[in-house]
Every structure is written in C-alpha cells, then in structure tokens.
Image (cartoon, rainbow over the protein chains, first blue to last red):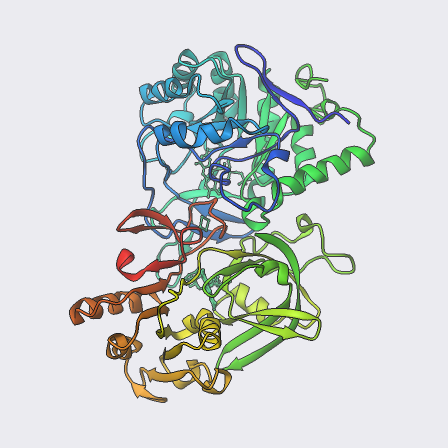
Length: 316
Length: 269
Ligand SMILES: Cc1cc2nc3c(=O)[nH]c(=O)nc-3n(C[C@H](O)[C@H](O)[C@H](O)COP(=O)(O)OP(=O)(O)OC[C@H]3O[C@@H](n4cnc5c(N)ncnc54)[C@H](O)[C@@H]3O)c2cc1C
Ligand SMILES: Cc1cc2nc3c(=O)[nH]c(=O)nc-3n(C[C@H](O)[C@H](O)[C@H](O)COP(=O)(O)O)c2cc1C
Ligand code: FES
C-alpha cells in the first residue's frame, strides 16, 4: 500500500511518508516529553506559529467549548524565531519526520525576514505561511482576506527561501478560490485549507464574551463540513497540492478530505480530545485503504470531483 | 502519559454535593504523585464493543476535563485511583452518573505535583472548597512517612467540608466555614497565617482569591516559608500543546498544565 505523497517538487521537494500531519498551534513544537504516540510515525509536524520576536499571547480566558468544537484566542504565544532556530531545529534535525515551521509577520517585510531566518536551517523541512490567524492584532488574517495582500506576502516569502512554501488560507473570505489562485500564481508550492472560522461565544450569566479578546477562532468537528467544501472549491480552482484541515478526527474524515482534493491532511483540535488522534487518523486511513483494496493513496485524491481537478500529485 | 479506557469500580456522593469516582486503570497514573492530574473525556463510548478506538467517541462535549488524582487504594483486582468533584456543569454531571463497569476515556498522569522536601517535618496543608481533592493523597503519604500534618479545611458551609473520619487519625484538622456552620467562622487564610510559623513547608489548593489572600497575609506576617500552590486554569488539552492555560508569572509565561499546576505562591501571586 503506497501512502507516500508529494507536497512540493519545484525548488525544494517535500515528500511525506504518509499524508497525516499535525496542525499548527495544536501540537506545540512536537518536543514535549511523553506523547501518547510516536511522533516519528507521522507524515509531518507543523509547529505553533512563530513570529520575529517572542510573544506572550492573549489574556485569559483563551479557550471555550462550543457544540462539537471550541473557540480559541491564544494570541500567537511563541518564543520567537531565533529561539526556534537555536534550540529546537537542532533536535528536529535528528528526526525522520519532517518539521514545517509556521510563520506570521505583522508586515509583508516581516514575513520575508522570517523566511530569510529559516533559510538553510537544518531540521526545518518547509515553512507554512500563516495569513489566516484571526488572533493576530496585526498580520495574519488581514493579509489572507484579499488576493493582492496574500500574493504580496507569498512573494516576499518565496523570494527569501529555497525551502518549500505552504500558504495557509482563511475561511473568513468571500471567495477562497480567488485567494488560492493569487497565492499559487505568486509561487506557493502548496496550500493549507483552512484555518479557524472567526466566531464568538457569550456567557449569559456574566453577560460578557466567553473569550477575553472577544472574537476567537472556531475549530473542531463542528467546522468539518465547511472545511471540506473549501478544499473541494480550491481543488477545482488551482493545480497545487492541498493540505486539508478542519475538524479531522478519524481516518474516514481524512478519506473525505482526500476525495475532495486534498493530498494530505492536518489533525488539530482532535488531539486535545484524544491525545492519540493523529496516529488514530493514520491507522483509520490505512484500514480504509485495506478494506477498499486501494493500493495507492493517489487514487483517492480528488476522486469526488466530477472531473478530476488535475493529475494526481501523489508519487508512487 | 498513557491514554486508556478506565473502568469505574465505585461511584458515590461522598458528602454534601461532592462526589467520588474510583477507577481501576493503574496505567493512567503510573509514577504519579499528589498534585498531578488526569484528563477525562465525559462522553459515552460506543456500546457493545471494545471501547477502542477512541476515534469512535462522540464529539460533544469535545474537550476533556481536568481532575486531580484524589487518592489511591488497593481494590479487589489491583490498585485503584479516584477523583473528587462537585457537579458544576455537563462534564461533572456526566461523571457523577457513571456506574461500576462503565468506561471513561482518560489520560495521565499530567503536570508537576507537590514537591516535598525530605527535611520538612511539619507540613501545613490548606484546602479551599473542592481544593481538598489533591491534598488528601498528600496527607495520606505524609502520615505514612511520619510527618506531622495540619490540614486546614475551608468552605462556605459545613456541607463543603471533607469528613474528618475519612482522613488518617494522625492528621491535625482545622475547619473554617464562612457561615460558621462547622469549626471556626472565617476563612482558611486566617488559619493559614496562624500555622505558618509552625510549619516547614505549606501546600495549598483552592480558588485564586484564596491564593491572593494567602500571599498578601504571608507578606504582611513576614514569616518566610515555602508555599506551593496548585493552580487551576481553563484547559484545552492538559498536555502542553494548545497554550490555552498560559499564565503570567514572575518568571514569564508558564503553562499551568505542563509547567504547573504546582507553582511557588510568590511566583504567581
Ligand atoms: C489541573 C486541574 C485540576 C482540577 N482538579 C479538580 C478536582 O480535583 N475536582 C474538581 O471538582 N475540579 C477540578 N478541576 C476543575 C474542573 O476541571 C472543572 O470544574 C471542570 O472542567 C468542569 O467541567 P464541567 O463540564 O462539569 O463544567 P463546565 O460546564 O465546563 O463549567 C462549569 C463552570 O465551571 C467553570 N470552569 C470550567 N472549567 C474550569 C476550569 N478548568 N477552571 C475553572 N473554572 C472552570 C466554567 O466557567 C463554568 O462556570 C481541576 C482543574 C484543573 C485545571
Ligand atoms: C488552540 C489552537 C491554536 C491554534 N494555533 C494556530 C497557530 O498558531 N497557527 C495557525 O496557523 N493555526 C492555528 N490554529 C488553527 C489550526 O491549525 C487549524 O487550522 C484549525 O484549528 C482547524 O483544524 P481543526 O478543526 O482540526 O482544529 C490553532 C487552533 C487551535 C484550536
Ligand atoms: S491546557 Fe493546553 S497547553 Fe495547557
């Protein structure tokens, strides 16, 4: 059974042993002790989003439970890119699993600067450009909501790095296909679809927003149908590999995203509800392929489309 | 950390509105000490089949609940551990309705628990309300290693006070209630300051307002004793991967679930 997928092949290549990765901000930097599964079995790890300087994030409360989902406004707490390069990358360089560093700048120039700092760093396999976080006071989603700003950020990153570039899109837009096209034309190797939906919860007793910063990002199984629709839409619009993300908790969820046109998937919030979730998704995917007699995962990619969007990007 | 379906062996209302649930699943608390906790999913596993895989669990409520490990005991079929809680919402209501034989998906042990200095002989334990949960196991262990233990049990009313009959007889108990229905009328904080001089080390668990008052009273008293506080914060994961539980400390941002939940009182308050 072939599970290998290719996410980039232009300047640098990014080949994953299997299509299951962790989603940014839901697995820290992968370096905690005593995970409930072996990290080396996953296709890739995506780190918490990193900024140029350290950030301490939002005030409490930062999270709230919602029906089949959750809200978060972590506010991009992270130790800054230099600490990542100095302390974490050397540890990743001994891993079999590729590590993709998620980056966010307050300006287009900062995105370029972040890319430059990560260029050539051993242990970093690719970057994921976060133009989709609803929790950044500056940067993040504001760049991802318009095709031209999304393109400008993508160009700034691509210019400064030879590593593969993934751009993570926001669902909080009028037409995600427009943004996807602009980003791919600007040189992105792959797209991650989607980040959280901007949302809100209000505590009736205290008469205040449940999250200190007011608005927050909705994630978890509740958003899966939205994410699936957007992956399908983007797959029909562009010719680049897509990483599906949003509410994935089981192997069958992953299969649905592949059928919609994703080449790989990210598991996020599900890992809070089940610390084995990424591995359980991979096991479930394997079981599905086995039961259905699918020899190559490439057979599934985009198969739900009437006409397949593009040649299967999987390698064999 | 180990994720497992833990079998409930016993579940009862222990006193007032406070419930205790016992589990036979030593793998979830292997190597644990007092002050460490487990995360529990409060949803029913699919019936009539082995509960695994966890991917089959219902997705609502989605997030796990944090519970301190309350106590250990030798059960009929091996070691058992328990949680002690008040019903405050959906998750705790669900836990309180479990029957012996039911399975609960959980993982642990998590976080850093209390750290007892070997040289400390006289220990002051301060519990505010349900904050007594992790302190009972600490008291059990301290008595076993022949330390002197004074346990301050604070609550709003008598209903909230952990029964003295369930504690080792060697433990010196001081009860304070806000309405005076049991023990002294007043706050646990007052009893804390009175015993501060006596103790070598103090251990507390309760609401943040109690910690704030303790820190203030200790500063005013000028009595220097190491005080460890077990903090609570809203949690997404409990395992250090979501950054939902971050707090500002004098040493910078810390995650309650991973760097704590035990902190030096002075570091935070
Ligand atoms: C490390 C740790 C150890 C804990 N140990 C215990 C214990 O031994 N016994 C015990 O009874 N409780 C303990 N708690 C608190 C417990 O986790 C929450 O009360 C529980 O999640 C409530 O779940 P629920 O679904 O019943 O209530 P929900 O419906 O989720 O909430 C009910 C109310 O409680 C508040 N709440 C929910 N979660 C928290 C939280 N983590 N901190 C503060 N307020 C919260 C909500 O805002 C709401 O007002 C602990 C918490 C932590 C972080
Ligand atoms: C607590 C939390 C923190 C997150 N932090 C980030 C982040 O730093 N950068 C980012 O690009 N996405 C972040 N996300 C979004 C996830 O990566 C993912 O896109 C989203 O949650 C949808 O997937 P899910 O439903 O599987 O969680 C975060 C999500 C959660 C729940
Ligand atoms: S609860 Fe997720 S990091 Fe602490």
